[in-house]
Image (cartoon, rainbow over all chains, first blue to last red; front, side):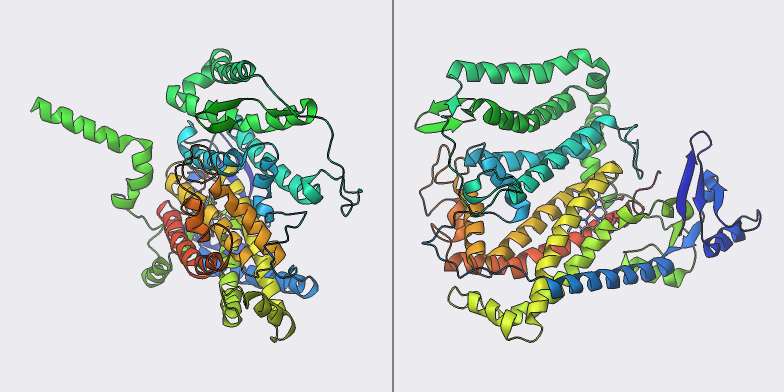
Length: 279
Length: 261
Ligand code: HEM
């Protein structure tokens, strides 16, 4: 299979490794030389020459399918899918857990009220994902190749979000025991830990409001002043959408930190009409 | 005259926005260029299949490395799930009185039942993982940039549907794991602002909120099992299959997987 070795920026040339068959085909159009085992430099024009893709790829895919079927079958022979006792609505298990791909959400239930953890945060996440192509101001760079240097902001922000999601899943799946208490891997998960005695505290209301005003103020205004170029390339609308989403995402680790270090239950706890809005 | 041209300018403006182009762009007005006028019969067949180009440029092909197969593997897992799922359907009855027993039969009586059930379960895990990894690769190779924005959005919907398919399937064995896992999951709906009975500013009574539409009552029970079964075995797979077709067609329209254009 043709495979990228190296790219020279100036001339748009690429060096690829090709199979002999592919080389034969390119050679037919472009009589240039003998097939050299290994690498070949292609100019942009030559990159447009075609190889018989359908013929080669279907075979490879078939093989990949066979290999994966085999792996899954062996896995299934040796490991049984879980099945516990019959469902019993009267018996809530002490270690009640969601399936692993939703355990990140369940993990957030520890730090946020359910309407935030289960509804608002996932919705913002989805909206953010859908907006990705429209927020990214750069429409050309990096298409079709892995690059950090050319898109540092995009890659770091997305990488941060993706990593956080999976870290939450790993903690929820492997580091939580009965009653969603934190267990190190070497601790016995069948022993119920004692609930921590320390009382959790709330920020006073003014403090909470001040915290959010300051936080969003800093997140939205500071980068605008410090990274003027960044602000310019994004434009006003994109900038505010991006920074708000980013600020909201950062609030998750911030809240976790506040909870663990200062036993903060809610940063802001409002009572509006009959409803408690806790953040 | 002048007025008219001004109005036209405005109209064109809308069509020049990235959102418009992403959604309607070459979907409606674009032209489709086959890569080379080669063997017209074979190209016709390949076009009908729409999945692979018959020919591919060397420059484009060189980027197809392992991580570019994550999407294809998701397709493969989906088909494997459809096959094993169809087999499971033969022995499964979405009734709280028999569902659990059906699964036990599958494990101990039905020939190869345990193997098929295990395969169905593990493949489902693999599919969720690989779809997420596929999204990561699409992001890291900037494949969501024009002209592929719409395909990214379709992808996000596919991701959500994949998760929902897994989640609805989770309830079907009707064991403690399933029951309480799903109870946690659906209790989120109860807490939705406005529309959930326990959420902030609730305007709907318990039993009449969004959660009860999903669950079919105030707690997980027979109506939930039937709903989840229909979603899991019919609605979501059909939706995923349809969207997948659209996903692939969009890839071909965009000129194949993203290469440096
Ligand atoms: C059921 C789930 C999905 C299936 C079966 C699927 C399948 C595929 C396949 C087979 C490809 C061809 C290239 C490749 O394999 O990498 C592809 C490309 C693509 N997918 Fe998906 N996909 C799924 C979910 C997603 C998700 C979650 C996203 C992003 C949010 C996404 C966005 C894209 C985009 C933008 C492309 C074009 C990539 C390019 O041109 O390089 N897809 N998909």
